[in-house]
Length: 166
Image (tube, rainbow, N blue to C red; front, side):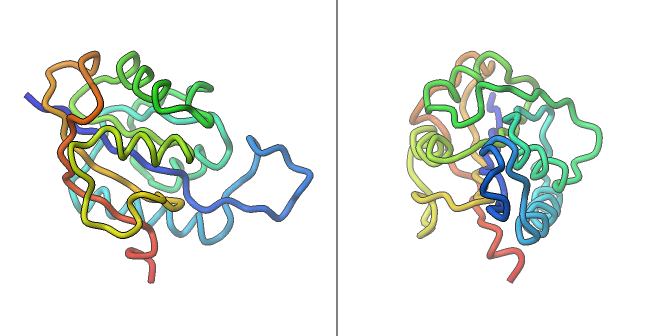
């Protein structure tokens, strides 16, 4: 049995208002376009989550909205806001459900988690810096999300928005 993990860093956010708290920063126009493109990519590839675990930050919520996933259960979790790798793994174990989980979160934890969850990285020059909107799809050889662990996932797909919008 396998479970599928989709790990997405939020799309490009706006820095137009320097007085705005980091948690409240929205997406910029490019980020909004990227979110829609990522949603289309997920749909075209058949990567359909059964549940979404999303940081409570404005930019992650707006990224999720742009994906246009339809009716999918969503858990907004404060713990995913700038989460460490261990917190991300614990969150997946505690809140993962169904066959496929989408996590929408932030760097640097997102990049580190992506690197640590797979057995081997994809052959992509942007995988290790995990730019905004970067999305990893990996299959884990587990029956229950509680059994998720590092260095177990097989890469299925990896994409960055620039490959979808340029």
